[in-house]
Structures are given as structure tokens and as C-alpha cells.
Image (tube, rainbow, N blue to C red; front, side):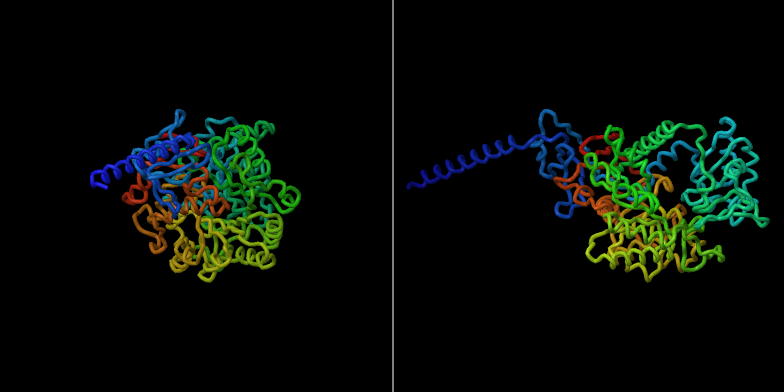
Length: 574
């Protein structure tokens, strides 16, 4: 065959091949169902090691349909009804997961006095007096957020640094006042509130709590841990409908805050049966957009009667899961309530408080393991953590057929060196809050001394080295629901004065992002459903104004949320 004919034949084959490829590609494009939402021109970090990065993502229904980095690759998913969002290069990550917070507490904090910025007891008294002047006699004045170790001076008079109520009571003679510590583990009340609660010189301390008294035995108005239940906010003549409306308002406010901060799933660390009922109703009527992973807060008797009926996984289109029981073995370090192996450095007469008995917690563990519940126990002190690990280990050994239980310890702030390896060995999840490290550090030294603080306080790297999976969160309203501040704390451990709290325990930025996404999903048995941007998973997405993986570290806290997307729906735009 002449060379010319061979060339013509070769060209003809190429033309035919290209034609076939064109028509096959066109047919493939025509058979791809269009996406409902396409995000393009971004830096997408998937937290999926199999395909860690992309520049576009297509969403169909409530799921991720596809991702890619090829130029214009997204166009085959675009149809007449597709919404296209140009990310302008913005960092896009899986929806952020708040792995420990108090959902209704977040909403409630928006409805009462904010005491977080007060720098003295006198300032707080003035704030409360101003609120009382605008209230009717008998109205309760509520506030939260004070912290005596963050005041610029010690109040006078005081008992162990806590103010005596006299100035507060004088400023508010007609209104009961109840002011909750930032941690939620102690409260201050005025004379009117104590009068309504019938607090007298003969009122005894409840188990796991303490009424703080002066040298003469008179209550100063400070109540620690379980003693807070003695002085309760009383809603007067509010009807059940009014109380439910107030709770609904708290839930709505909390959801708005979550969306504004890029939080798509919230682990609610303690809710009553009634609150769960309202959550379910609001999900069903479409008024609650944020996904909730709920920990039941109920006594063993109530759990035995009703608990099993409340276990639910992925209810209302994967918006509500209830599969965890919340317990508290001790209090908070700031209130001298964390249960320690050795006395407090600044209060040698105290080792803190055991707030729920070991026997009660063992009974909870038996119920949980028999009924398919996870247990999440608040434990802050090294003694509290050891006792909790012992309870868990005993339950696990008694039930060798039960595996992958993923029981949690909430906070795990101060640990004995001997107990750190037990987290990985037992598969126990330390659900920690990085922001607590940098917020608490100035007074952690006072409470524990430098040696104990260095060995076991907020030891993320030691726990990870032992094989533990750490999810991150803020414990809101203890700290603001500000993921970027929490992320910053995780990667810098930097205090407001510029010093660093044991820098060897920092997370890398990639580890910190995983802690706020995939690790949070893992802690809730939901890693197959969320936590990474993977085809088939829920399209929960957060878009940020800065690249927190590469920007100067001090720019991280100022990063804003541009979009919050839940189930493929854009629910927040900056």
C-alpha cells in the first residue's frame, strides 16, 4: 500500500476514534443527573485521605455527588436548576462538628446577662443592679459567665476568693438573682434568692456539692456543684406552654449561632427527655436546621423506665441521633470541684468533689452496655478520670462480646501519667476542648502547680501517641461557640499574653481540622455519614474566608464563615 494511502487510512482511523469518543462523552454527560448545587473555584480540603483535595464539588439532594479538580469538570453536573456558587478560591472543608456543647445553654446565654467580660465583682454588681432597675419587683435576674480567676482583683470580703453576697443583695433587694460561673459548676445568689430557696444556717450540703460559708457558718451566696440545685430559677406563674415556648426560643437562638459559626452538627452534652421530644418536633416541622447528636441526662431509675425508647439513630433524615448517656463524676477545676488524686496547690484542704457515686455510675454502665448506648462521662480531675476509666474497663471486661463501644470521657483535662495509655488501650475517646487549655492556663498553674500541669494537663499529643482519637469543641456556653478560636488554641496553645502553655502538646493544623470534622463524626459513630467530603456522604460543608491551613497563625481567629451548608442547602451566607 502506498505511503500516502497509509497516512490517509491512519487519519481516517483517528477521526473515527475522536468521533466515537465525542459521542460517548456526550452520551455520558447526558446520562449524569444534574446537581442541585455546585461549588466551584475553591480550595476544597476533603479530610478524605483517598482524595484529599479538589477545586469543585457537586451536590445532589442532601449528598455529595462528585468532586474534582479538572478545569470545568463540574459543568457536566450543571442543569437548568443547578445553583452554582463561585467560591473565589475560599477554603472549603467538611461541616464543622461541635463535639461537646450545651445546645439549650447556648440559646439561654443569649437571653440573660453576659458576665464573661466583667473584670471585677464590683462590675458584676453594677450590671445586675442596672438590670434590676429595669425589672419588676420579684422578677429573676439571671446571668452567666463570671470567673473569679479572671477578675483583676480579689473581691472583699471573700471566702476562698468567692465574693460574699452583701453588696449584690443591697443592690437588688426586690429581685432574686442567680449568676452562674462560666464553667456552669458553681453559682452566686443574692439574699432574695436564698430566702426563696429557704437556705439557712442549718441547710446541709447535698452529696457532691457544697454551700460556701463564712467563719460564722453563714452562707455567703456561693454554691458549688450539686449544691446549685438548692437555689433554682423559678419561673413564677409561667404555664407549661410558656415554658415550652421559652425552650423553643433557646433552641432557635442556638441554631442561629451554629449556622453563623459554620457548625453543622452539635453534640449536645446533656438533654432531658422533654427536650429531646421538642428537638424531634422541631426537626419534623422544619424549624431546627442543625443536626444534633444528643446525650441523655437522666437518673438510673428514669433510664430504666424510659431510656431504651429514646434510643434513635439518624431520625428525621439524619438530623437527630440519641444513643449516649451523660454522667458527671466530678466538677470543674476553676471551681475547685475537679476530683484530684492529690490536694489542690492553692487549696490544700481540698481534693475536689465526687459528684455522682461510683455505684450509680456502674449501674449506668450496665444499663448502657445492655441497651446499646454509649456512655459519656464528665471527668476533669485525674482522680475523676481514673475512676471513670476503671468503671469503663470493668464494664468492657464483663461484656467481651461487645466491641467498638467508643465510650467517651468529656473534657479529660488533667490526667495521671499512668492513665494516659489507657485511653488508646480501651478505645475510650477523650472528647476535649482545645480552647479550655488557653483560657484556663493562667490559673491551672495555681490549681495544680507547674509539675502536675506539665505532666497531665490538656496533653493532646500524649493521648494521640497512645492511640486515642480526640474530637474538638468549645463546651459552649462555657466558652463562645467560635471554632476558629478553638482551632487556634489547638495549633498554638498561645495565651493572651503571648506565652505558650507546654508547646510540645500542640496539634498540627491538619490534625486540628480532623479533630473538628472526621474525629467528631467518629466519636458519634457517624464517620460513614459525615466528617469528610466524600461522594455518598451528607453534603454538610463550611466555607471559610481564610485558608486556616496555611495563613499566618495569628490570622486564624479572625477567619469568618462565608457559607454554612447542611444537606446541600445553603443555610447561611456572609
